[in-house]
Length: 140
Image 1 (spheres, rainbow, N blue to C red):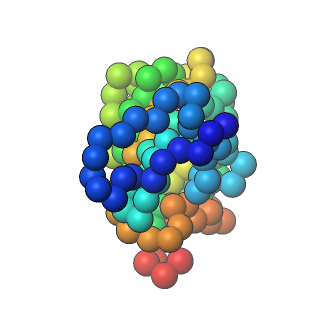
Image 2: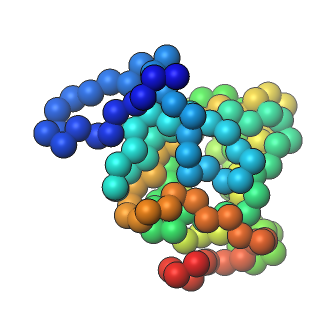
Image 3: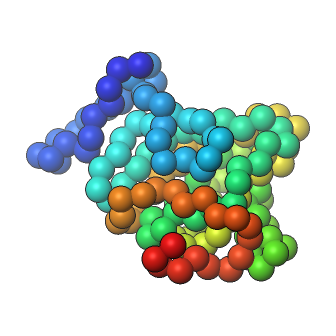
């Protein structure tokens, strides 16, 4: 794959073609995807999960996350013991606040396909954790 651009410093319009996306970094352990843009305050990428696939428990530090689901069903499990969840279907957009421990579940009968946007600050986009819980500590 080609190298995709950082967000231009001059704040000029830019495009990353599908063929120019690169392998995503900063995703939960064991999850693969593509990255289009990345800089010190934002990240844009794409993810596909097979039906029934689940990411490990994680959080995104000070980054808020937005998911635009184009196919399948994204289930975000979160909360104490992972007992709470929200489903985001094709055509829907979900919001996951920074520091919220959660995991991604492909809850439908077809592949989950989504565009992901992260906005915030920090050197690390994803922190894997041992299990569910309410909120991570800002230093974790």
